Image 1: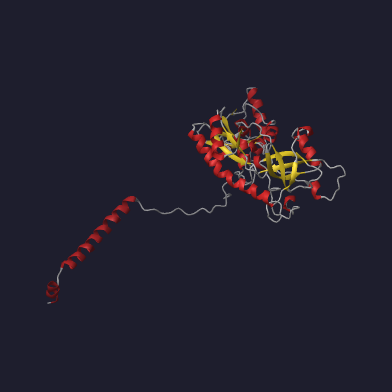
Image 2: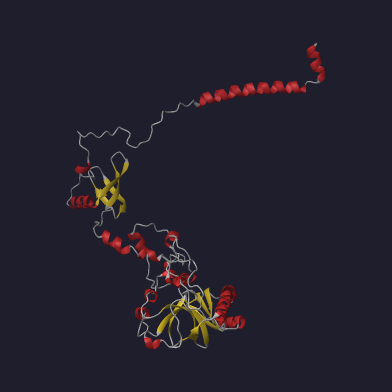
Length: 405
């Protein structure tokens, strides 16, 4: 089912990604919210006069007041008032859902000061497209200028306003940066009002977007808004190998999805005994090598008196039983309980082929001495043949005639 944005706007232009209703991400904007009320034919007698407008395909979203003389619905491109100019964005939410969204983001109605000017016409959309085409070359120049001044920062994204009078430069840095000289250089180069905004590595990935190793779009660019701290202990609780390249996301930090299933793993680990890395039996000492949390299995490496090693799978209840015996100074005969051991009168034939692999007959191989002798004889014969052929080649026509006589 396609998103609501694939419908047709009031100005006749198609909304959404033009995929004919086949998009699977829920919309063409990042952090998109499905406006299900606007799809239903419900007349709101007391409409909420504030709408949510997104800029640059949802990279930033703000709230604006909707005047009575402007009739714009969800999905329409509108021209909004900005400080010292105007900008063009898309209405992503309207009606009562905006009230819920403002409550979620803790934005008060009195804090919304700017208004929607009008519905955008063709010339407004063309100017917005011109501004988007200038952003990538500007970002390349901005990075080169920052490197020339020797600043330890990275310009991740540039956003031009639709009236081409203001540009916002988003950058990442480890500490504080004195970019006063850089701002003056940007103003001379781009001839616009410059705004520098520092963001984190996760916010930068959310603005740029991309695909994760799971094959889906990045969570930070589709639905994730609050970034919680992720530590390597989350990977240890889930029995994941501490591999920095596999645990890191596009932003270079630990993946946010490591926290998604952490609570489930912590609940499952409550039933597992602690301090059971070593178990003692009559046959010897066993070391734990791994755990299967959801199957409630613990695997131990057992070494007998002969020095042979074998891996034994134990249930959590059996491990608790052996631990209690070791604490009392007792040792079981084996790791596995008597219920797992086969009886003497059982019909189990351990000598039969239970693996399904066909046993091939042993291949007869010649000894190395025989091979060497054979190679020596063959080499002598070959040399004899070669010598005779060389002699025949050296003979001339006169010699052949003498041989006939």
